[in-house]
Length: 335
Image (cartoon, rainbow, N blue to C red; front, side):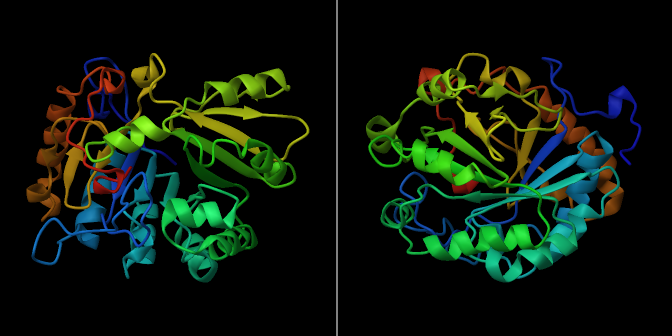
């Protein structure tokens, strides 16, 4: 059961937005080469081996967030399952009092083998990146010939007891933007929430954004015209506009960050794999936390630093003004 908290112990910014949702990156390494993220593959930014958050540090930062109202943690990357201690990470996060949802976002390549183990460790929700239902287009976008392996992993997730699997599809003009009929047929008899995510401009992707960005508005108009109904989001849900239809087991979600007032209901914060708090995916700076993760006795100071950082959180990401902040690619701080 979630802890009862005093108002002054809840993470809240100066615009009175409360933060119930932590996206915790555990690595920036990824084994895919998606065109919109790491088209040339992962390249370390340091010569020495990267030092990602340890299990003890993950426990301390997660507990601090849980004590201040966070009830949902999403474990992200890069590709989080590349960590050998990934199952232990899930178990640690799930054990924190107040955390009721433990989710992950994965490219799915290890799901067929490991998803049952993850669920037993405490994973409650899972998102899988599938940018096309055409194996050739999947390869073109991801740089990896793993379509059938990922699809088998989705089947394994259902076999392991997940009642719903969320699928993330980055909308790319002239690549997968024409696949809506195929996707709709796929989810008609399966409890999949398919989430179309508008391509977002990052520091390294200006040309690709100009070539392939397409709005999700046309998909929303099609859904509404064909009897799909908008659902109401819960307090720790993400930013997707989710639609359901009485004739479909599955759902459609739309994430459209360029739409007016997208940030108005922001309820999530990010911590990078190296222990930096990011107030926004497209923020101009982060807040160092790692020096306060070495001992349990530092938790009060850690919470105070996070609260201080929230005073600097902007009202919007300003993506519509062409501001991409300090984010070079989505893998760098957990997408």
